[in-house]
Image (cartoon, rainbow, N blue to C red; front, side, top):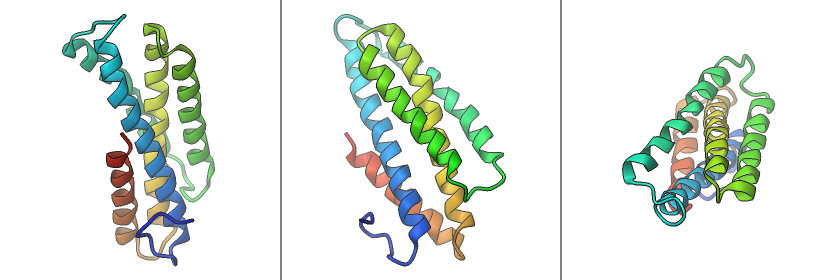
Length: 151
């Protein structure tokens, strides 16, 4: 099944759009619920402290740099590694997400996974089609739609 609005003749964009959309939806859902969780019992964090948790997610910038250095953007390994990191972050956060240490451990892993997935899927959309600009635009549109509808 292909995402709605993705042309049937662009298989690489279909698959990459789905990965990007699901990773961004996971990211949006996580941050929407985590901000509420941190403001309530037992944490009682202020908005400024909750904002500091976003700095933990800045570890994703490292993933963007590393993913950008991959020579073969059409190879599925960078995307697979990113998806595994997102799964690991989900496992850590579901097991220990009620503790401050669990959140601190899970946020950087989630940030690295989501950023790595974004970079690898965007790059492969440009290198695996004959018309890269519409392919990337379509990929990013589907990704943003999923992130907006995730929470």
